[in-house]
Image (cartoon, rainbow, N blue to C red; front, side):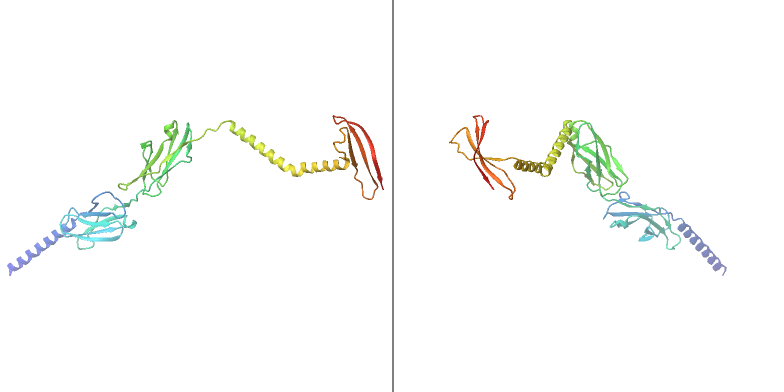
Length: 321
């Protein structure tokens, strides 16, 4: 009986020590480490991602759970001290963000969390557009070039080129805005072909812009403004003269013609040129009112060779009532 009591007491002590040792081992589980197996935390669409999670100390088996934010993604059991791998595919923008893993035994309250990993989605840059406020320039002038990619994850780095040779330092833009580059047109070589390049963290994705060329602006002579002014003055005078014809010149000519017709007598030759060279017969007609008396008569006018009047003689005078 005594021997049985001692045996039971020894068994109880051994069981307590085993439980204590097990509890100590369970308490010794360390905070797990979460890391991206390959590459950086910048990912692209449809990229496969592998995350490893493991605790350096602890009593197996250990259960590992991967979280995105507060949402559970997957759970794996680790049978030893080796890491477990969580394989993911980035299918949309919602698949990027903060990830962490939890290591625990079967009891829910003894787990420990890893530090977070924050993935960001990289969008490839689009073909940049190279432009300038003016495509014309002249020697001795400062000009400005701008380079801009409509799409692409920030930051975007731009470089300017002339004839395939870089002429600017890399410009890293942290905002969605164009990179600006100023240069001085000093010689004919500055009118060459310009391009720019855009790139970001997206792998194997460097884009070049369209080609851009400055053309030499024509030099205007100092006499051009004077010629333009004279041309405008002549044009205005021509328009004024054309407008004055129907309102002033034509009415004035008609008035003079009517006055001459009323005040002058019409002389009509009635003698043939064969009859004489010095005597010409004219008929004089005066315009009178219908109710008044009038007379018709013939005048013989003698002229010399130069057309001077020598004498006038009335002939065949006829008086009508």
